[in-house]
Image (cartoon, rainbow, N blue to C red; front, side, top):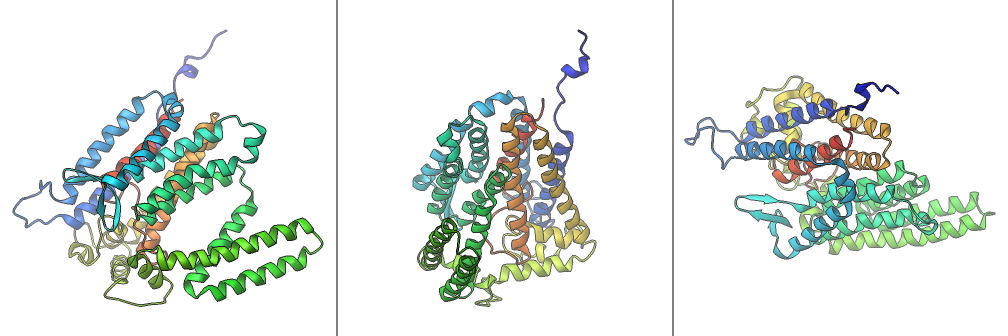
Amino acid sequence: MYTDPRQRISRGFDVRLIAVYLALIIIGWLAVFSSSYDPHAATGFFDFSKPYCKQLIWMGASILLAVVLLLIESRIYQYFAYHIYVVCILIMVAVLFVGTEISGAKAWIKIGSFSIQPTEFAKCATALALAKFLNEGKTVSERKNIWFLASIFLIVPIAITILQHDAGSALVFLSFIILFYREGLNQDFIIVALFAALLAVVTLMFNEVYSLALLLTTYLALWFFNRRNKKRIIRYSILLGVGIALIFAVNLAYEHILEPHQKQRIESLFGRTSDPSGIDFNITQSKIAIGSGRLFGKGIGNGTQTKYNFVPEQSTDFVFCGIGEEMGFMGSLIIFGLFGYLIFRIITLSEKQRNPFVKYYGYGIASVIFFHFVVNIGMTIGLVPVIGIPLPFISYGGSSLLSFTTMLFIFIKLNES
């Protein structure tokens, strides 16, 4: 039987994803360069103590890593998924003892003048492990407990990251809930989780009395409409007890677990305090920078807020404000478009996959990228607390760039055939 030779040829690597990746890292380097390059410096352009030169090194390393990832046999990623996850977890544990503290978080390994954050790579490892777990055949008892077992893959890195005092990175692992929902997690669980988040927000904004009032009112309404259904009443009563415990747990965590600067950020976000020259300074200057860019921006290298260091962490957590100032609304729109297309393309390719492992992995990394994008942009415009997570492919830093490169190019390789 004749077979068209073209059907035996691999589809090749997805050029569109690679093009978006290159566009994002180039825009990121321009943003870092613009904020850190001084044309009057005696050292000239090639000053490897400057962020833009270090970022060039990380970009070269990331592209080299991408090539290596594309050369590895795709089946290896699935076969060694659990091994990769365990190795990353063990390294994270080791950081607790031998790591270096940066910005209040003991989450880094110092190598010369460079620092690596293993937590960033644990996100990719978690996506691989969850994909393999969800893809494996389950016994009847395992199917009943599938979401409980799957959540263990998240609880372990979350717990370690919290011990490292890096609450922002810990929250990122919760983005895998999107993958769980896509693969059949009951929507009632999502509703309960959102209501729990609402209780936490009300507790932090006001106090536990308001949260208890909201919880009891909701319970009484559910009891009234379901009073003849004993099973539901029992379920709602259990949730009532859990809700009360949650309210006091949030208050306890706020008072005794969160760092002082984290408390200040929460209080500032919810309007409980105002400190324009202190904790609010970052957000205020970021808003000024983005707003001053107007439609087309001031041009690369001409941003006054960015150039003169009015915005702290302008190359990392607040890199987007430099883009808004120098590239304006249109430049910001390009960033939104690139990330939107990147996530859409990953999901589209995942849905077309016959191998469930690839589909699960694709949804996992799409969830992480989406969370990083939304929260980082939200930080710069004051919609979410400043929790210190980078903008993928754009923020300055080797750990972030290498980890997101790893995520993306493993997916590209898995979609090759």
